[in-house]
Image (cartoon, rainbow, N blue to C red; front, side, top):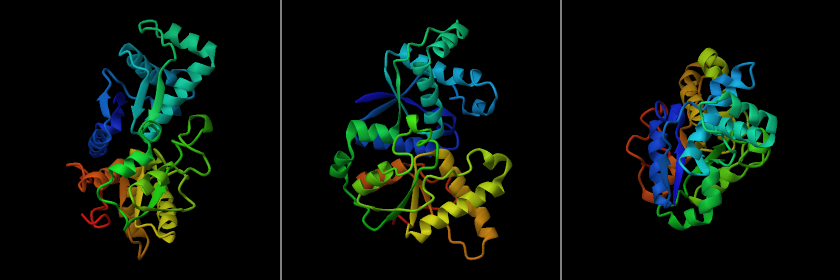
Length: 287
């Protein structure tokens, strides 16, 4: 099975290890993620502007590239990219006046027809492969791990673009269970990690991370997984500051979901995995 893949900026810079693990994990599932051509930034930073029209053009242009390739499905690995692309696509499909205005404005591009479907890779796996199939492929069950599944906000809200129930999601827990590990419930799993506030207010984001991590720890987690590179960055990097701020704070390693999936299937991790982690996950997963 082949499907077009939108990497986005982070997966090509600070999160290349996550991209590597996702591509290898996909291959183990019989899926070839083919990087789309001529992609541009999803446009998430422009969501901070007051012009609701202009910040939709970047994601729509990416969907035009998919249309030009003759494809109708697009997979992303980043929750922020997913939310940006999905929301723009939904708006285009549901608001004819907006769709007309977009195509009129981008007069040097082919008209977008609204026929592309955007998937987060986690949801694509559930819908196209099935967690039952993953369970069959597991060669190294992770039965010693108690995993906190952290969603954050971008993949769940708003409701019409979320990959699961916005209040009681289970998709990551079901994925973890298929790998043989035990998912643990914790109250902060759907709360925001602080998002891009990490640039200007790292102390605020560190406090958010502390609340999230301690919630997972009190529920018995010895590892936290995410489906978002930005959440991964904030939760991992903040723990350096937290060790300096809170006496007795014990870090918990953070992993991207395909990294733990690859280990369960192959007993290894992708070559560059964890190179950017400040909290080393290897002791937790007994590497």
